Amino acid sequence: MDTKLVKSIREAVQLSGLKSGMTVSFHHHLRNGDFVLNMVMEEIAALGLKDIFVNASSLFDVHTPMLQHIENHVVTGISADYISGGLGRPISQGILDKPVQFRTHGGRPSDISLGRTPIDVAFIAAPTADPMGNCSGKYGKSACGSLGYAFADAMYAKKVVVITDNLVEYPLQDFSISEDYVDFVVQVDAIGNPKGIVSGTTQITRDPVGLVMADLAAKVIDASGLLKDGFSFQTGAGGASLAAASFLKDIMLKKGIQGSFGLGGITGYLVDMLHAGCFRSLLDVQCFDLKAVESIRTDPRHQEISAMHYASPSSRSAAVDSLDVVILGATEIDTDFNVNVHTDSNGYIMGGSGGHSDTAAGAKLAMIIAPMFRARLPIVTDRVTCISTPGRDIDVLVTQGGIAVNPKNTELMQRLAAAGLPVVDIRELKEKAERITGKPSRLPKGDRAVAEVIYRDGTLLDTIYNVK
Image (tube, rainbow, N blue to C red; front, side, top):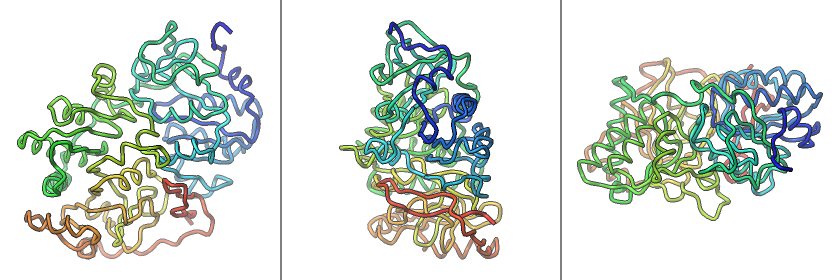
């Protein structure tokens, strides 16, 4: 054929050979602005297909139309690394026939590449593509930056469909995914809403409690012995995590320290650290804001990486294995340092590991920043509702009421105490919070499994049961 262009998504679905009982996949780089998953599932339903398994790197509230497809048995199974509350709450109540399979950002491409989770047809939302399927996320009205989570889908799916709203002449320059993986290309009016794809800017917290925790977090890193030339770092896009990065930047500039790389989902604050000379490069699996998108488009030091390169435990090596420090969040942490980021305190699904357990396993220092309580519920508990990241991989918890160090890391405990930082036993933090909030009662679990939490190596880590 002269090109791989087909007239519509429906035609692409038909030409791909998709049948009832098969698996389709999607990436989440368009985040809460994504139109593609809903458009594709609408056509699959209209063609009368049933019993479809959806393997998506993450699902957001924009994807709640999938609830109708679940009720109509078009969709009977889901695998994802993260599911927000719009889908998570009904799933927690038992709407899906089979338990959701929760993987990690490293575990998902690992299982795809090893053939554990084969994909029949991958649908790749591409902000720019040419008629042969070379595509990129860096350009176009729906630019999202890195396409890191889509690489495994393109490389291992039996058929690959690229869907774009910015078709350019062949060959596309500076492509991310190349035409040799692509079977069909579809041009549509819009693959997403730019306002939901990336934020204008990600914001540092102004909350006094968050700033106290961020300051302590930066001081922990400074005292850890890891903050020296060649230092590598990942943090999330939450307000307190960004504030910690800002405080860390000041320390690095003051001490003249140049790190090797910043990693993960990249924000404008990490771009600022790159420009300030704090890092030599950024390794980017996902852009969180417009400044990051602009940077990956224009700065060769800001490099796009696949989810396999980022965190796959079955790759020959992964960037998380070279990580010094990662800052992570938690909805709950227990006295054994197990962390929950899958459910809220009521047991409803509202998140997922993403790269949480991947980076915690790889980093020399895995730090949780969390307040002592939220909505009058203590963060520290005797046993988390769901284990997302095992306590063996967590080194330290930073709260406004003190710093708890995992007893396995005696050297860190000694370093922080020597630096005069407020080190306390994690049980003390639990008791201190409960004196303010009272001791919450344990919620009863249902008897039906609604999700399986699969660790990055493919083993079952925990099971989430329905909410009564």
